[in-house]
Length: 186
Image (tube, rainbow, N blue to C red; front, side):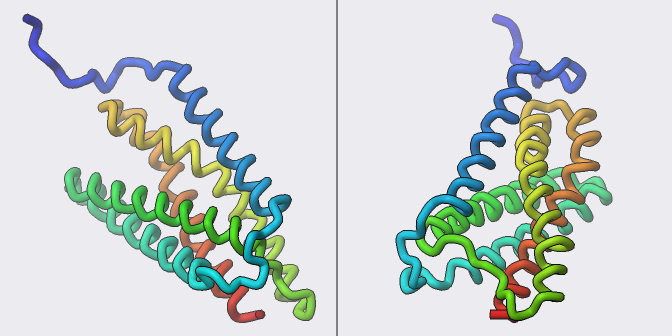
């Protein structure tokens, strides 16, 4: 009976896996775009689960914290602690996604008031647009980075994580700022 061995970190990742992750990410992004911009809210008055936007901000802040902690751990070569931090960031991001979808199903999209045109311009073009674009880009990158790690492809994981980390961190932090600006200018 042959001995079981760990996967070799040097073998090539099947393109079909990467294509599947990108396709799933594209479908998820299209669903979210439909949900935010076309789906009529179930509770437009916002009487049910009104705490969800604040919960999303807290989950984004937690994700950013776990990402930063994980980055510090990997710099100190504390692999197990790094892995645990990254799993915590992934779990918190997944919980964010559930709360985000629930919030948009119930309440629809929250629009920035037109009564503050300069703040609205900054919010839309300097904050929200890059946040949305990078969130769409981050999803497949996060999933592929996790796949590479979980399958033992650490050299490829490291190369992609150098790009995934700052994008994921930006999306998490800017998500908190999006919430804060919407809350401040209501």
